[in-house]
Image 1 (cartoon, rainbow over the protein chains, first blue to last red):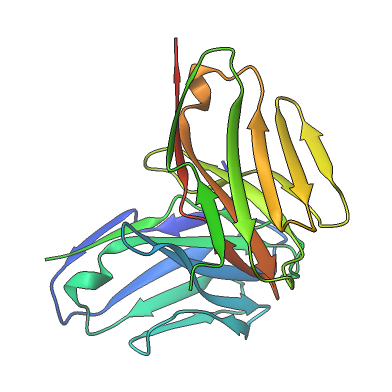
Image 2 (image 1 turned 45 degrees about the vertical axis):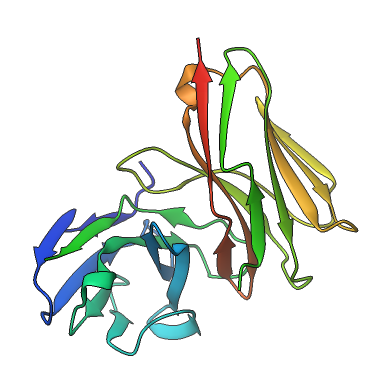
Length: 114
Length: 110
């Protein structure tokens, strides 16, 4: 058990809808990362937050947004969903968010768009 | 742009054998190289990691070999066991962003 908690585990919705994925980092970790895993794109970094502030951005679509709250949990919001957004979404956390610190992953949310 | 190339895509090894997975990178700004193990239905789990100022790191049956000049690194799993059957990802980090390889599906047979 990595200590990173993601909810829900599975989400099924339709095109055009909006969903929110939730992540609670490991106790003591200040930085949260979001990744997308799909068959065609592999594991891709989306965005990083550190202590409530956005720190780094990757291949995140404009339809997607995230935030980290004062209690350090994070939410990833996906809107105007398309079939291609079907994927596994992982959250990871690390102590301070520096490059050479280990990132620990949750078990993900599987998003299926019908 | 694929910045971390991983091979092979799949690997079958007999129990007790050595599993070897290779990765190559292009970006010399990468400063941290972790390996992750992923089982079906689970998130990637950190296995072992190395910094570029070290040429080898060993933890139990798992060893990373790192060649900075060749921009290559590899994972060796000694005495491979059926419980090691999983997908393995190499990764490289810069500015706290992890760039992953495409994964190697390892099957350890009896």
